[in-house]
Image (cartoon, rainbow, N blue to C red):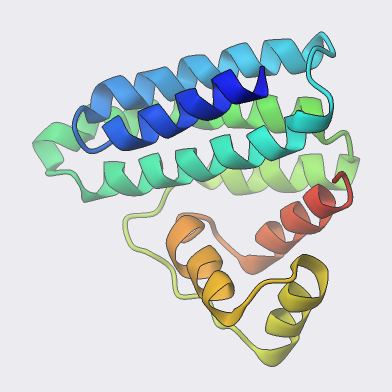
Length: 168
């Protein structure tokens, strides 16, 4: 199952720039299907890994939505509510922690922002990322500035990564 999904995720990543709308809808379907499988306990060890890949891909999709011309992107921006709902459902099924559940509800309810947010990387955050995840300086820059710039604050990001790391 992992190999097929891994191939599928790579495939739609490559297609993303070629056919944005199709890719967007494919991700909504993928999240719904994957959530259903997680609910029925069909996925175990690979769930967190694939979940991380899917959510990263959705981050990229939301960023691309914001970069489209207004006439092309308007309907997709409206449809991000559907994508956020799927992400929310998916994450709830995997991470049962009440505090985290409320946190992602609040963050995703805000939705994507029209501008990328600046994230200050102080020494404590950098040390935490290196200690917990074995990241290099480049990894940290990529994570905070590229993949997750559509989210609101670093607490949400670090909460997710700490929770995910504990499930490996």
